[in-house]
Image (cartoon, rainbow, N blue to C red; front, side, top):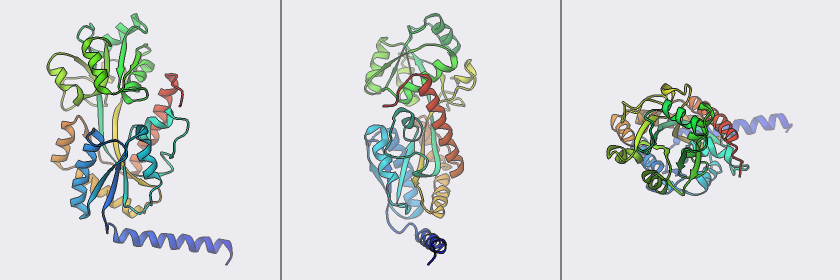
Amino acid sequence: MPKQPLALALALMAAAAGGACAQTWPAKPIRLIVPFPPGGGNDILARTVGRKLTEAVAQQVVIDNRGGAGGNIGAETAAHAVADGYTLFLGGIGSHGTNPGLQAKLPYDPVRDFAPITLIASAPLIVVVHPSLPVKSIAELVQYAKARPGQLNFASSGGGSIAHLAPEMLNAMAHVKLTHVPYKGTAPALVDLLSGQVQLMMNSAVSMLSQLRGGKLRAIAATGARRLAALPELPTVAESGVPGYEVASWYGLLAPAQTPRAIVDRLNREVVAILRQPEVRDRLAADGAEAVGNSPEEFAAHIRRELARWAAVIKAAGIRPE
């Protein structure tokens, strides 16, 4: 058989097989890979959505925690899984935003190896300062920092984390020099912030609320595009003197590339419907996140923007890929 007709025949056979798979899907449990250990924010979100998806498709959604390497182990496992709709991946700002700019060689391609399904949730950070720092707004922080270049220290949960890169973006956009002090996790960073060893930090609202309510820390801004529902009195960084500044952790559902489009579309419909349920939205809001739910194309565009944006921040901060 000539090469061209053979190739056409193989393509038709593959399409037919994909169509048949989509028609019978799901016929067995679905694995949702979470690239972090149990108990964290990613895991809680996956289990919240997974329980609802189990009800919607009448098949068990099994959470498979594959922690390690900043999310890369889980992402690699998902990228190389069979594209039959029975393996899904909870991607996020690390696996599909910052990691490609931080590491010279990844074991997966964040665009080529995945089929985006929907952006699940966005979780802005809040900017908190030690009460001894005489600033009550981003404008005052910028003014104070410009008068003392390099003298203000910000804590992070580790080099390359969003808690590191969000202040670096502020450095670039506000033309200031805040000095990074990395820690091995949020807890030790918070200890030194509370003691005044470092002056400020950007982190999730949930991890900071008890300290804010007790007056041990002062919140001066939220990093998202809109004010947080949990802290509506807190202005955004953008409305406080740094126009265009917007940072949020985010979580999205993806499948291995070449997963049949009919399955991707079914998953999109089911998960978007789940995210519209008041109890799910309230559960996410309690954790400082906002339910999203968009189309595969919109999610794909979001990933491309995040990859480009964080690559530029990483380059401006002089962080070299490992």
